[in-house]
Length: 462
Image (tube, rainbow, N blue to C red):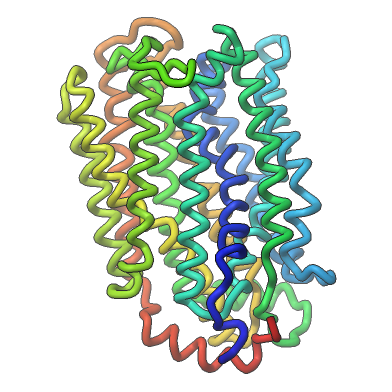
């Protein structure tokens, strides 16, 4: 049996998964807390934050594909992609922490500080996460094996996400003693240290097995091949719309509970000296439900086409989101139940879609003869970051449009805007993203053919 097609060890799968655990300590914090932090704690207007989140993507528009092409051309004794996990872990942790340092500045100074630190963090995120994601494309030549690895990846991603949504609120209260600024600083300091350690473990436990064919360094040819890769274009478009949906809903969560549900930080229950409010419990149980959902990924991928699964699961999750609009504010546990159901449905989708990205990289080589794994993954990561930035920016504009003013009682119109931001608007974006998958044509039979034809050229002994 070809070495690259053999099952990967449990240790390597766990090691690879820890890399996305490291990413999600900050990624999930940004999704859920960043807009709220900037408006209600750091004191920047929602419209200014929305503009900042979108404008900074201009830099990402250049750096993501540049990083992908740079990684593709990197040659070290550790491989093309793994070295960046070692080199960039510390800058990643430092810049992530700096975003929440909250220096005492004027209003304009705060906005400048937000622009600078967010930009630096996104540059570090690009420099470590593009190679990390591309590593999945060369860790094995088997599509099924990559789906398994992707499941481990997102188990740890969701686990880190669960720690974020469950403990950021209680930890900032405990560590800050009621001082939200100090609480965020210390909490993010802990996450920064864990991120660095997890990336280093990922570096130490993984290996690159799939080697590209010998080819020139013609960037123009790489870009041309990418633009002719139809499945890549599909996942690129779907990535923008899907992540816009996630950003809008995540950005609206804290506002939804603070201003619509009326969760003012009151204690729902205590555990281990930590106070848990309605918001923390809601998000925690939802993330645990996603972990349950991801356990079904392998079984579902074995019996159904990835394309079919993405369409059906995404529609189910969008329906659960819409249902929230019709749940009264005092039906808290009904909300929890609906959220858990939608999260279980949504659980397998990240692992499925990231394994599709690796399939797209194989298809690109099979069709054009050029393998640009880093460029393929950097392109879809740019789509995701663009979707997140535009979605977060859209959230800021929605708040401004409906007359939101931080830390005050909101008008009925503002409450309606917050409810729509948490329910209907993300469902619309998710549905549009789902439509893109109808044009995805890589099925299991095609991938098996591609694997066989590429195996002799791509594999090296493990």
